[in-house]
Image (cartoon, rainbow, N blue to C red; front, top):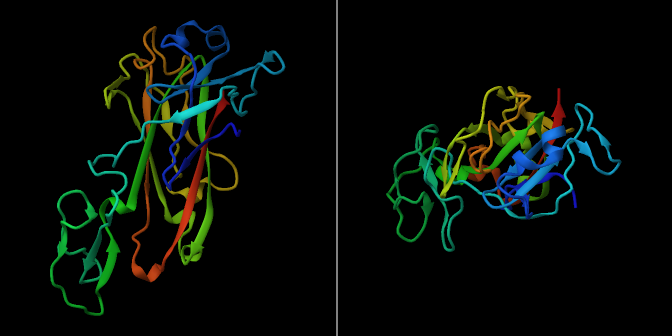
Length: 281
């Protein structure tokens, strides 16, 4: 199995690990305390990335090298809805994404009457509208965006989060009309809060975390793994002893599709974004 983490925009969430690690792992594990590590956490399961080279029983991953993950992943990470919103991630059976009608070629009119869920279903309706040279039908609301998140902590190391994006299995018109550069990416950090009953961040340090500038869309993540975030605090995110939830923060990623309209045709595609962690100086 590949050691990278994968997010599939078609709906598969970031994979994490099932392990017997306890909440005090960052405080008690010799290898983490001595050589540094990062921990990806979904509220239930862990994935541990080490600087120590267990295969050769030597120290350590070189600066700029990929940190080592020897754990077998299982389960899925927490997936958020709209970041900053309250819409569902996907429509239910029998629903579709909402389309808006633009009469002037710019502003989407209010001719679509939505029952509040942001998706087109049997309880919604369209008011009468006329066709003119500026009329356009556009994908609206939650249909254009998708978000996911995962929790992370670290001890005794500086590291970066890097990602590599690719399109797989593009079919129909989408093979020509949609490119990685059309899909916007907005990463963000949530320092503390409550996510579905998982209280996080009360003993975490978020100083010297940098979201790398110039990464604005998935087209910026092609060719080689590209830095998205740098975690420059040598002591790590962990601030002091405590449960793992207290020592973690949440990383959020919002993806936004372009303003699709019928002129772009029909088709399907899977977008794969692979994440991994690299040791930094």
